Image 1 (cartoon, rainbow, N blue to C red):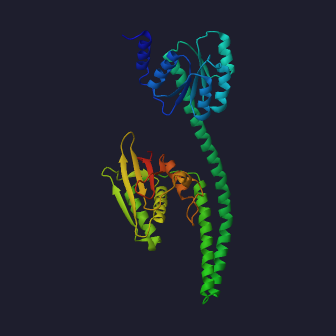
Image 2 (cartoon, rainbow, N blue to C red):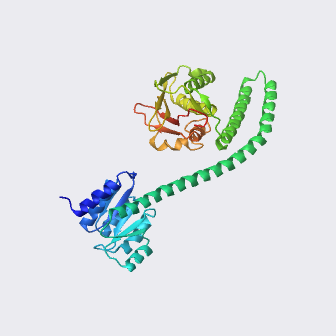
Image 3 (tube, rainbow, N blue to C red):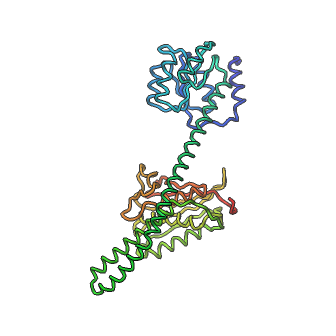
Length: 387
C-alpha cells in the first residue's frame, strides 16, 4: 500500500521524467523536520541534484564556509536560529547561490521578512514536489544564463583587446619594415667588408638572424590578434598532415631520424571542408612541438579517428615521447607568450586554439599514460562549405 504522499511523489516523478537532469548542481537543505527533509531529498535526488543536508544553523554555516552550492533551501524556524539570521551569512559566503525559504507559517509578514533578508523565493509546507521542482528549475536556468553571459562578456573583452593589439602591431610592423630592410642592407654591405674575418662575419649573421626573429614575432602577434574569417574548401587531412611533416623535415634536416607514425581509422573521412591553410598551421605547430620534445631517434604518433554520434567529429591525436607536460601547465601552455623553449614566441598553441575554435572545435592536452604529451584536436565534420 502506498500513502497519499507516496502517490503524489510517484506522480510527480512520472510527470518530470523527461526533464533535463542537472549535472554538478548542488543543493544544501537546512531543515530540522526529518520527514520534510527526507521528502525534499527524495524529490531532488531523483532529479539528479547533488544533495547535502543539515538540521541546525551551525553545521549549515560550516558547510557554506567550506563547500560550494548552487542553491540553498532553509527552513524559516530552526532549533538554534531563525533563517533571517542565517541568510546573510549564506549570501556572504555563497553570493551566487539563491536561498529558498520554506515554512509552515502562512502569514504575510514572514514572507516579507524572508525576502528582505535576501531570500530568492518562499515556499509553504507541506512542500509540493511540482512547485519545488519549478523553483529549482528556475535557479538552474538562471545559472546557465549567467554562465552564458559571463562567457559572452569574456569573448567581447578578448575581442576588444585583440583588436587594440592588432591595430598597434599592424602599425608597428608597417613602421618597422623599412628599418628591417635598411638594417639588412647595411649588414649585407658590412659582410662584404668583413671577408676573411670569419669571427666578425659570425656576429653579423647572428644580428641578421635576430632581426628575422623580431620580424617573425611581429608577424605572429599580428596573426594572433587579427580577426578570423574562415575560407573553407575541400581538404584531405591525411595529405595535409604528410605534406606538413615533409616541409618540417626539409627545414630541419638534422632531425630526419625522428619517425612519424600515422594510424588512421577505416571510417576516417577522405575529405572535409576546412580552412586548409589555418589547419595546416595548427598541424605544423603541433608537429613542431612534438619534434622539439622527441629525442633524435624517437617516434611521433598521430591518430586519426572519426566519431559519428552524438554528432560527426574528426579527432586528431598527436603524441610525442618527451617529458610530458606538468598538470599545472596544461591550460597555461595555451596562453599567449607562454613557452618552455629557449626560442620561440609562445604564440603557436594560442594561435592554434583560436583557429580550431573558429572551426567550432576544441584543442586540449590529454593524459598520456605511457610518456610524453598528447595533444587532441576535435573538429565538427563538414560535408560542404557551409558546414
